[in-house]
Image (cartoon, rainbow, N blue to C red; front, side, top):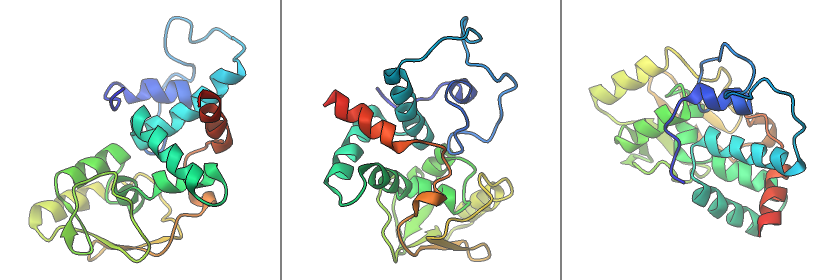
Length: 202
């Protein structure tokens, strides 16, 4: 399945708050659809699927991409769930979002894909690029890029800058100082359920 391009509030009504997907809040608190207000007991599979879908929609990745990240996370040392979140959080589009250059991850992805962002002085237009400690992420040195980011910064998505990042709002230059820690992940997610979901599918 390709990346979702439909109504975002429909997704947040079903899955709950997704800080990377949209800054808007739905007026209705119940899930969309004809039976949205009906109370129904969810199966364990449905609960695990919902947690997996939260990751997919918040970070804007396809099912195929998420499975590839899952395989990488399994090979990493330590907790598979934490490694999965680290891989998703260290994507370039998410890092640009967390630096405050864009209000949402889709907005950050557009900045990256349109060549407005540089990594260590070179333009990188691949949203899934994995940022590494020590790398410098900045806005491309041209007026159109700077104006775009300055406008975005007037309406930031998240208030707090994670501890592994630093950002100079005057020069529009950020730096990755390390790998994100679990407590700085803004999405409310139980990553163990996502690991369970894929382990039962394998």
